[in-house]
Length: 265
Image (cartoon, rainbow, N blue to C red):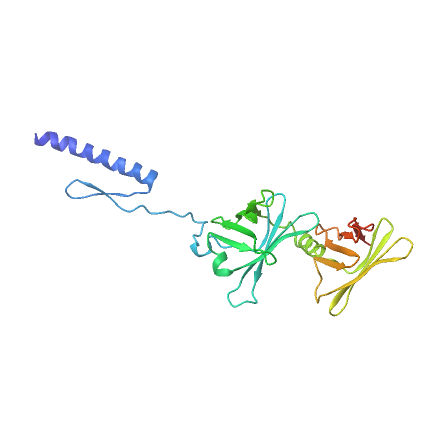
């Protein structure tokens, strides 16, 4: 009997050690054999590859820059002029830069997995945002008066600009530039002075159709002018072309005759 134990004990131990090695490779759980022959398990150890750094402090943090759901652009801009800091969220159309939403969120709220932001001009318009763990994607629900807008909602993913030159051109074209513009024979002049922007649009015959100003000390992305005659809105195209789109209604609720896309001369 003792001879049989001597023969089979090494074989049993060999099988147990082989099983433990296989279990460690598959599950990361290391086995220990006690003096009594029983097997115990040590806690699983999460292994991180040499080229990966686990930085839990930065998980679920918003990344500044532009995101897109394929139909709309959302820009996240850091806010440093408040005590707590935070972000400004701007949603606009990619072609003409027409703003659909603008709101602010404090830094401590934005660095959680989800948060809700109200539009600065209309508290009934909200964005519910879920942040992916790596901060590269935002699941957005755009609601107005309790109804979700499916085209503005969706998954917004972060995208990089291809080059610094392209980035600078796109940033510059996001604002209404000073200069002379033309559209179907109409001429538009944009001038920035110390504390305001002045706009004048003349007909092909030289008649002044719009002469207005807006108080500002920085270039504007858009400008709205209202009067007894109606309203006119100027919006930078924001696509690198430098164009400005003019829309609006006259006092008879008709489209302005000089509406259109104006090209910078």
